[in-house]
Length: 366
Ligand SMILES: Cc1cc2nc3c(=O)[nH]c(=O)nc-3n(C[C@H](O)[C@H](O)[C@H](O)COP(=O)(O)O)c2cc1C
Image (cartoon, rainbow, N blue to C red; front, top):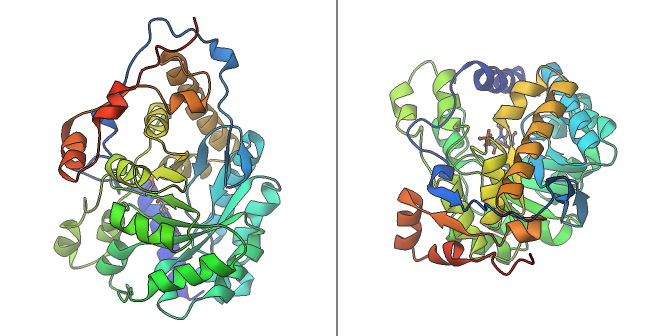
């Protein structure tokens, strides 16, 4: 890794911890979703099952920690904290872009620590989609998987970040064909994820046809990479600022995608509590993913990370109790009312929002 890349990664962590690198005017859209309270939940809170399976692996709850880091000493500590927590709780995690270690083997340990601390958890390797337009292919994808003995490979799309950073690579031509090639040959599932701008129905369809096995919508509403670049750039701030809230809000992207493709979908981008997770699952997400909030806990340690994730799971359990869902299958069928800008956008784009509200749980046995 060049000194430059090392500094960039350290900058990302520092900015995400110290600055408000979150969406400003845009929201993820969770405030537009209401789940309907049950005065008669008719379930035993303690017996609610949160377990699920994703790409063939069992999870104790539908939560993962999103891709964040690797390549530096601090990153090693962060990956270790997250890995320790997800192993204990039987969840999953992604490591940050592995480009640094693909190019400099000395840095492999900063990612490998995740597998060391999480020998059985679901681990997601990570490479950048834009690298595929600049010479990366099956060989690098395999390296990323083998490095951490990963269960899946995430290819991240970050057009906005590349567009607003001075050293950004902005030729994205040919990436879809490369994704298809890797998805067909890798022997492990490929997940395509956005990094804060969302995935549209148009792109979701193309990616499903390319053989991608899951999508992570990574919508607007949480960490904004335009904001991160705003704090990094010494000049040109105005240009970057204009894109602070660019993209498709998480909930909108989630509905567009889940109503269209058959592959599992991960909700991420501004997912901040167990209620957001419950709403995502009621809108048919398979998992929800947290990044920024976990980063804050992970710099403190593994125990703090585990405490945070346990609290989120507990909140999810509470919501399930209040809507009378005894497991995740029932949660995906509870009535959900879509209002505000989210409903407007979806209706204008031709998506159905009424049927979520008209679902009835009244067929429950009493
Ligand atoms: C410090 C930091 C570094 C990140 N690095 C990566 C990365 O290397 N690869 C990637 O796919 N996503 C990366 N992301 C994006 C996250 O995986 C996620 O999509 C995004 O932060 C939105 O989730 P949040 O609102 O919960 O933070 C990074 C996020 C943060 C906060």
